[in-house]
Amino acid sequence: MRKIKIILALAMILSGIIGASAFAGSKDIIEFKAQLNDKSMNVGVGEGSASMLIVEKELPEANMVYLDGVSAYEAVAQGKLDAYVYERAQMQLAIDSGLKGVRLLDENMDESLHIAVGISPKCEIDDFENRLNKFITIIQSDGTLDDMYDRWIVKNDETMPDIDIPEDPKYHLIVGTTGIVPPYSYYKGTDLSGLDIELAYRFAAWLDADLEFKIYDYSGIIPAAATGDVDCIMANLNVTPERAQALKFSIDLFDQKIGIMVRDDGSINSNTQDNATTGFFNNLKTGFEKTFIRENRWSLFFKGILVTIIITLLSILLGTALGFGIFMMCKDGNVIANRITNIYSKLVLGMPMVVLLMILYYIIFANFSISGMLVSIIGFTLTFGASVYGLLQLGVSAIDVGQYEAAYALGHNRNQTFFRIILPQALPLIMDSYKGEIIGLIKATAIVGYIAVQDLTKVGDIVRSRTYEAFFPLIAVAIIYFGLEWLFLFIIKRLALWQDPKNKKQSKLMKGVIIHDQD
Image: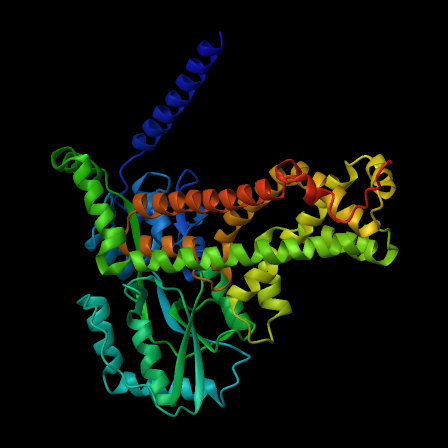
């Protein structure tokens, strides 16, 4: 009977998939912009972008879906979005670079994007806005900006010119960028490249400043500038009224046409035929080469793994120490310590981790020169410490009171009783839950890209932005996370076996106890 239920469930799922595919394929082929102005049409836009405002104005009946970059391209190719409205030149580059299953309509949106540099209201460089505008005016008038646009956008020339950085700079310039939007800001190997990166180097040389880049998602880059974490944003940033309320903008660098990407059924069919011809394993080989070998992208993954391990390991060690320390202060019934701890635990564990990190980074530590990595460690230490405190409470409370009385009778004092008798019995009771907290912590580190930390998940996004493929970057990231979880759990398991009272000699357990002869 159980097998029949499983077969029926699988059949229902399969029929649902087939039905969804049939539904997706049953829609009319989109050839004109006007077809998208319908409530049944899902049109993708970048969250908070100028495209969103333009779609609201020009396609008021369409259902807007908020997606960015490669994820949006893939959604269109798979039929999850009917269209994606974004900068035409960037989408055309993606198609020319091998993106399959999509095409651009001949029509563009009526309005254009105004691309400019975002300026932090808390920038401490003297007269920064006027200096930046003067620099832009110079490179526009002498043709430098036109040359940059022609090389990066029109010709897709990825050669980064040599630009001398001042040896004895007067200023320190911090530029926020994304690293995932070719040809403006992206990683070529392990180095940042693109039009915006060249612009930043040229401006730093002109300003007599050394240069530092900080990498953010678009959702975090505006708050970073608003709070003064960066001096300016150079990331193909388009001007919107909402963004202008949070920060200033330079004069326009240039205007860009807004294109419309739709699904290309012909490309999908031909791509399927190509796959059948070249073979599944050849496609795997090509994907592996693009993801790991080309431009030494394996080194990006290595750095991302290292960052994830450091954040996880330090958060576990510091969080365990914090939770244990809090428990020791509260275990004897200290009223003040227990009240403070109760508030702390509810506050930290009661909010999503990503919200806590952003509060720490953009509000609490906004006026401090502190890295996103350190903020991540602080945030995860606070949450892990609260979890450890709760586990210790449960484990110790599960030990019978008679254990204390027996220990005192054997001559142990209060501390000896806790550390030698109670704690060794409580730890095995909470070890499985402790392992679960570690697994949750490892997976939670995937959100640190919101505060300019280039961890494993962020590296996967960076590589996807270059290969325009989801399979290998995402599968690689998933496998690596599984490996990290196994590694940490293996270490914890060995430690658990080491501290288990059953594996200790009697002389160790009876250390400090005075045994009198019965003669």
